[in-house]
Length: 637
Image 1 (tube, rainbow, N blue to C red):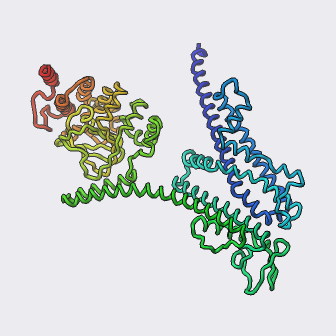
Image 2: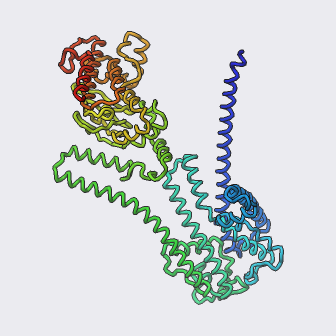
Image 3: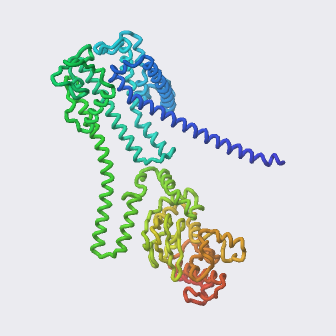
């Protein structure tokens, strides 16, 4: 019997364990995918930097030790192996996606591959980039065509030819933008690095600028060196470019790579690789930034053509960079200008009408806090164009801290809560600012995110803090304000207006009655009726919402109305009424409050006479309420 009773719980435990293991496995697979994408990103960055550098500075690199070159080649072959695995995975994934698109008659591997290569240029370029063209070096006839002019040895010519044939790897850089974007999102949202998102994207943009300058520098030096060996003159041999020659010296080409002067002999290979590269990089950066004023002159036709092409390319790059930055600044400046324009008009109105300085300070504090929060835009304007479900997810995630603070939200269904958060409007109130006053007829209620609000009702006052709500009767029953709300500190509120709330109730009609009861009362039992019980009294004292209230008095009775049994019963009765005129509702609520106030004072040991309003008689009885309601119904009929 015992084993049979434990069987369901064991099955439940096994199911929960299986689900947990499945989630962990899925998470590990996702992490492995992120790691693989990072490896592919590093491989592409390597080819972006090293592949053009090897070809342009081949004359200097082939002089490295043979063992170093072989280890370098082995590293590149291992990278190629990773890329081949990635290509195979991409092809299999694309074939699986195309399998359901092509009809069964033509659903063959050949047709699927033909369709994939025809419709997916990225994958086509990926396959071309991984073609092993260096296998052509098996033939002795396949060598770099200008290698004999550079005076290279046989082994050096083979390495230079290999680097030339591997230039198709440059096609791998096409996916750097996509992979780098994924990596940044992973760092921001998954790893949660303590670096601002704007800084990361700035570094990414700067890196793309430097990468473009690197490619232009490699192209410029490679063409310049080739032109120097063809024409015998170049900016490389000009005094002040890579080195300085004494006055009267002559520069001649010797042995393909040697320069000679009358007083000394100079070799181009004697100049360090870093100096050559940095000088070329300076030229490319100057071209991109339009600061090139001819300090590096083309000395032969090949350099002249290359300089014209690089200049045109640099103009395009510079225009793209400036355009992107201008769009960013224009979008920001447009918001600032519109915000300043509205502030200027408001300032003019305030000055012309002699508004007091206290109100001016409140207005200034309000707009300053509003600008710091949303920069002159609607709070969620950036995601307003996404789907409804995604929009609700963004708002729920953004307001998660606020939602956990509001006790009234804890009993709401998730779907209703998501839709309710969309209806809220952000409001900021400065210190001593009146949120509303007695007699206002605006149908709205407020939830406190930060700050403190003082509620004034007649002769009594009580406070509302973070996580509380106030002004709910005006929204739920359409009555005018029965109290005045004043911000004690700079307070951030969320306002729920009548129209969006009514639209929300069309989708969730069951919450009309439920919210009327939940938002006007407290679920706990009447604390005053159980003051003689020490356990209940201890639990009451520990509650943060009423811990500061030691006993019911005339001054704090209004703050404790929602804990009264009479008030709760009256609010429950009103919540169950389907139709109720606002004037009738206001009259009923006032009398319910009066009865609850008398009940609290009576339980606290006070006289039954009303010391708060100066009225006496039948305020503690609910019979006149129902008589008045029947009379109003008779008049309506």
